[in-house]
Amino acid sequence: MSAPLKKIICVVGARPNFMKIAPVMDAFKQLYPALDVLLLHTGQHYDANMNAQFFEQLSIPEPDIDLEVGSGSHAVQTAEVMLRFEPVLDKEQPDAIIVVGDVNSTISCALVAVKKDIPVIHIEAGLRSYDRKMPEEINRVLTDQISDRLYTTEKLAKQNLAKEGIPAERVYFAGNVMIDTLKKNAEKAVPFTDTLKHYDIKEALTANNYSLLTMHRPSNVDNKEILETLLKTIRKTSKIIPVVFPVHPRTQGKIKKFGLDEYLEDKNIHTLPPLGYRQLVGLMMNAKVVMTDSGGIQEETTALGIPCITLRENTERPITVEQGTNTIVGVDPELIYSTFEDVIKTGGKAGKQPELWDGHAAKRIVTDLVNWLFPLLSGAR
Ligand code: UD1
Image (tube, helix red, strand yellow):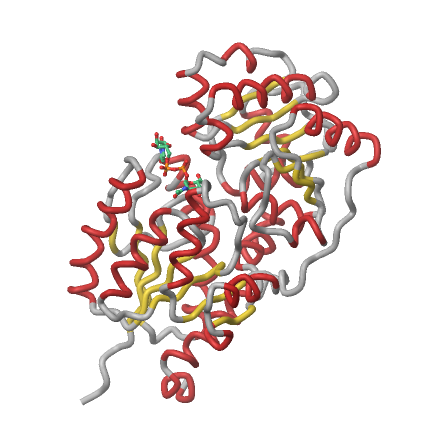
């Protein structure tokens, strides 16, 4: 009788997970085609422009399982994923699950698996903002605590994990899977002019002559005063160069709820719906500067060498500041504006490529993982 097929479930839930799982699924297919690798989508993000267009553009296979949880409070969303994930594990009996990043789906699935004694693999482990008010920080700390094998994107992460008592032998510095996706897709990026023409934005059609803004953190957009200050400051920067602003549904909702639409009704501010991966990368590559509160964009701008101004008080990705093009400014309007002016005058920080952000992280992860999880299988490959 032949041994049963080895099975791994890869979990995704929200937009930033998709670009992280794509190269991992691909590496499994290339290096270990005999493994049964399933893709499970929790359904945390479900709008076509937050979800389906990423699957299409990144050639991610259709999920084998969709939990369809949708939106809700953190407790509801986490609990729903857990409730719906448990029977999947009972039925599929995987040898391990892989979770990526720091969203609610990451911790929910990790927690269900660990209590069933199923190994949990965490990709993008050990990042710390040391800001426990950030929901993602809670998700990171807890997921790392219950993970059996942890893959890191920068060296400092291992030290963060050591401080929390995680043994060094569980941790493997593999590089950044999101940069694998960026490198693979940079050439296929949609020209920024096509995107801007599509949305009838004529004022920003020259490369290096607009800023790109993204903003969705609860700490920035859920508080009326902070959101208003940010929008006012953004409007001030738009007098220097136009702003292109794809608006996250959370932010859209809050702007409406707080009655702040007037700040966006300006000929130099151009709002768009959330964009596809290739559209956003195209806009990023040709921006004079990017202003953001996203984690992933801090890394992508460093990899592309585009100046980034981060509208947060801290970052869990310090390498983007120490070695990359990132400057952390928080929400102080004067600091945001003066940093912006400085980037316009000087061109911003030059930055360099962080170690192992080379486009091959997923292959290193998959090779190490199979070695660790199925030593016999890896020998027989
Ligand atoms: C989540 C992640 C965050 C990540 C972000 C990227 C957590 C705790 N946060 O935040 O780390 O940076 O995704 O987008 O997991 N909504 C829609 N359509 C959708 C999804 C959401 O309209 O497809 C709206 C809903 O009103 C929802 C709100 O956006 O309540 C927030 O969605 P949610 O998934 O809770 O968190 P994000 O802010 O997207």
